[in-house]
Image 1 (cartoon, rainbow over the protein chains, first blue to last red):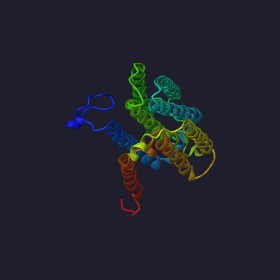
Image 2: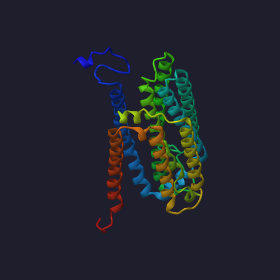
Image 3: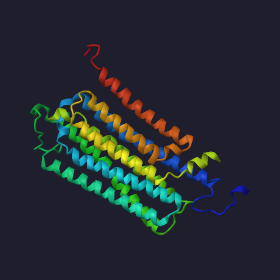
Image 4: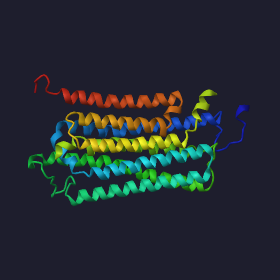
Length: 225
Length: 102
């Protein structure tokens, strides 16, 4: 036990042999969590794939009603936020405390823009009566008998983008916490693990959107015309 | 200790900027291509571009390139299980009715 007689620091808790081991454990832990998230979203992606195969024409027409330009802009905004996030992690690696804060704030801003654009898109759907379950639900160009299948598309659209947006809101909360902690100056080149694992989470949410965008907005768009 | 030297690797800003520009380019490309009539390839092209974007984000932004072997194994294992979920589900739905039995 003599090896463990060091005084405890943030970078090296008593239960670890070395700072490197502690870092590995944190990263691995975060990845295990992300794998459970992949399976969580995976169920929805499987559900989407099944229904898209059953009703390809209706889904193509319904997806055309989504604003692909806004979707593409939002994808770019999210990719930018991933870039600023990885730059915050890089600043952590270099121990640049001020730079960490700047890039975390930029990430927060881009995340906010994404959620704002998403809110505008959802508002459009409400105005167009594309809300599943609405009595006035109606999608142009789809036979009355197939309107139910269009409702299915929009149920999946709101469930998947909604769950994604929820993850973004949680990410915003994490970023706010990190910014407050970073302002206290607790992060250094030796210890920036929270920034590092929050980065993994943020990029994961980005990857989910990378798949949602083509699946919901782009596939078979030419058929819907 | 070489494994840890690898893990503490710090990528240059230039690398990250290049990856970002590639990702933005691919987003533009996939959006433009969606308006063209590619027939059955619409899905294939859209998903191929998405997978390339995922790989860029995972390998560079999430540092999988420099991760430990154990982390890499966990990542690949996770994707494998997702593959099982999707492939087995679809092999059921797509093969229904193939034998003409109701």
